Length: 380
Image (cartoon, rainbow, N blue to C red; front, side, top):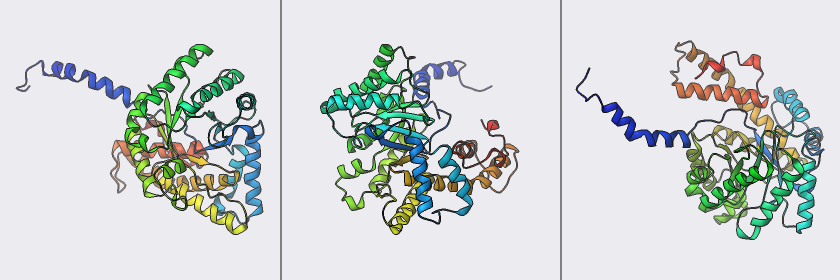
């Protein structure tokens, strides 16, 4: 057929076999399944079995007390329905910054009580944020996790541990080893205990890819820490924001490092809360909605919410993003699957992105199945 020797393919296979294996290991592709649109952090001592319902009620009350709703009236029924049905998609019980330093017996008691309170009405995703693995808090972090798991029993699906203040890969690999030891001690399936890494220290940003590799497949997500990171860079408090150029740089590095690994991204929070005068509430709503939309447009489909009154704008901005884009996405995907030109010639990778966009819209409730009348499963 050609002039190459017949053993050229065997030689290539042998030469590149280690590379093939490394690429399969480090870049397995998207993990599949639903990604929550937000993570709500609740201090451990304020968490109880009614917390989720209380947040939903408080969010609806904020809308009632400050009419008109701060979003397109066409979204009113959909957003209010979400706030009544599933106001929190991902809940993180916080034993770190939001909780602070307490006597050991107090944190033990709070860890036990929080674990007991998880089961009733738990969101689809739930977990806890322990203290970091730096020397001053290392033992306390492990103790809290153990007390929590003792009281919790087998973790529910979607359970994850948040590891904050990560600076170097060794801390991540230590966490992976700890997870294995916990699984052995508690009779959990090997590899079932997963964690997410917070990117909130300057040393972490240049080594994000190494942090993911150090997790040995246990890292589910990277969460950007707005204020710890900004403060560490010396940015004045008035200018610390999700849209500061320094924040955009860090998140761009995270995005490149996580691409293809199955590790998902979450943007941080805004600390401008919708509280106080009507003018202050509406200004905070406008800011939050704009920042949520900005994150979505940049490929960050998840972010942090710190207050119940942020939930209406979280869901409204998210729903608006998916509903605005759905008609074009459906049309382009239908053209792609039917192999016809609709004015845009999409590549297979873009077709997968279109299908992923629509799946996300369905998962969070922005779209109804009858609005996505294209076979998403047909996209390879």
